[in-house]
Length: 304
Image (cartoon, rainbow, N blue to C red; front, side):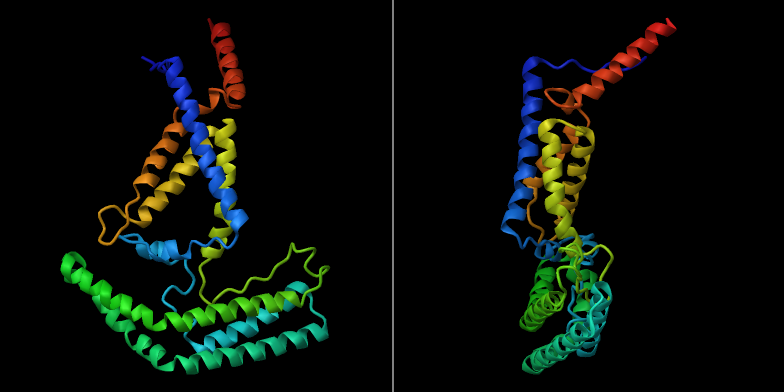
């Protein structure tokens, strides 16, 4: 026996339309807000992940533990590599290549001064890597709340040692990337379509920089599709999966995790919209849905 779809009352249909539009409007405004304000970054959010999947999310942050940025030789080599790659991308002339070399030299000197300024803290931080790793692998410190709190305090103080130096290095990296890109002419960048991005050695293929570019566009696209009721199942499913990943960054029940009630509620709403044909009520999904039903009915009648 075939299951029949339940018939919704007029008020239920109005509520379903309202839910679709409100959720869509929220996604659209989140996306536009990120674009208008600029500088959106999910680094802090991913870095603060808790629970069994925390390492997976933190791995999306390039050099999460700072080991690459605190290695002077690796960073100096990375500057040379980036200048060479940018030169190849933009097809630098001889004078541009020479100027790029000057920028690399100046940046390496700035980097050396940072290592000298924060040398004691950096050395102490490097020496503490093995200690923190042992604490993380200790089951007692992970399962007993009082011991877990002590472990987090030790880890917090350890991370604080390198934070000033890493902040300085991040600022230097940003200015270095900008300086190299400014050497390119408008023609070489194809009116801004080509941009060289400085990546730390060992960065994952999908890292926070790529994620930060995608999320605002994703939010706006999902929002528009839900508001107009177009491809609602696809948009709702994509939004639900995205919100599920947000909830999992703060794995429910994990020590130190932050509440994600709002995201969980909207996640369930998105899945409901995806599987309830919400787009065919006052939405553009009504057009293909009506066409499909009409064709299906014609096929059935022809067979009878």
